[in-house]
Image (cartoon, rainbow, N blue to C red; front, side, top):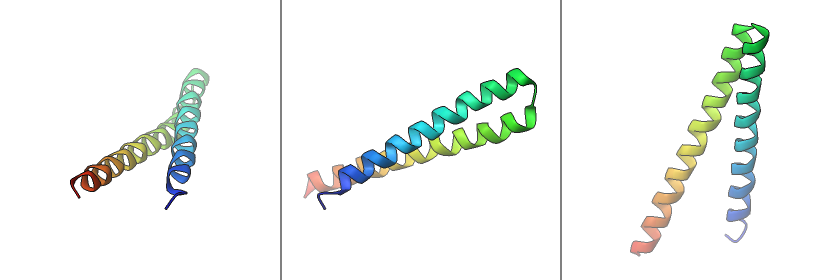
Length: 69
């Protein structure tokens, strides 16, 4: 139970770095004129962002539930 915040911190950090890397990749690929690779990188950035939001919502809901107990 005590290692959960560390795991969440590592997961958040990884997703943030993946998302930032994908956004940078989108900008580079658009600059090079490669639209197909930019679309793939954009999808990776979107998946990372959606995953971050989902984890944050679950965590907030869990904290709210525990505060009611």
